[in-house]
Amino acid sequence: MIGTPVPGLPAPGQTLTQEIVRRIFDYDPDTGALVRRVSYERHVGKRVDAQYRGRRRVLIARKLYEVSRVIWLYVYGHFPDCDVDHIDRDPLNDRLDNLRLASRAQNASNRGLSKNNRSGIKGVRQRGPSRWVAGIGFENRWIHLGSFRTAEAARDAYNAAALKLHGQFACLN
Image 1 (cartoon, rainbow, N blue to C red):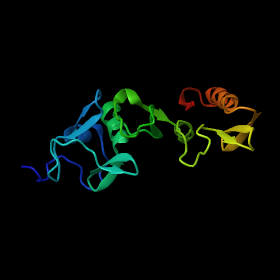
Image 2: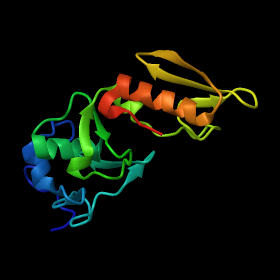
Image 3: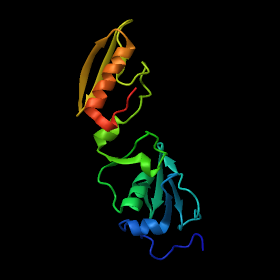
Image 4: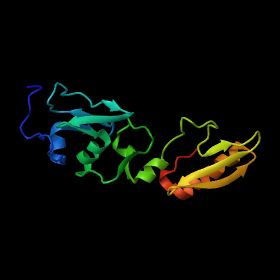
């Protein structure tokens, strides 16, 4: 019966395992949909879509989990001890081929353009009417990449540094 506690589901405070998650959810790696199979409430057969600060979250045994981390447990059998990064920077795209493990610094380097950016180019700011300055963050410090006559030259300097310093996690302009 929908809404009735199901034997074998986690009690509050119990460690979540792959077996428990697979009893509660179905996951489609092609679409990224995590769908409830059983529930304490009336959500059976529905995709987990609750969002908080732009990320999907799910309540399991009175504890909130990020859906990407639950998916990682579902597929690989363990919670990651680091971040789960969305390669395309869309936190609502939980397809398996879009998820990868990343350190906090790697995850941060895969961020897009800040909403406070006025130049429209990541890592580039305008200094005066005809000067553009490029810089990049790496290992908790700011690296000045130079001053340039055009925004395109500053962008190219940022992109080259991002590839060198951040590799596959670089977010290019």
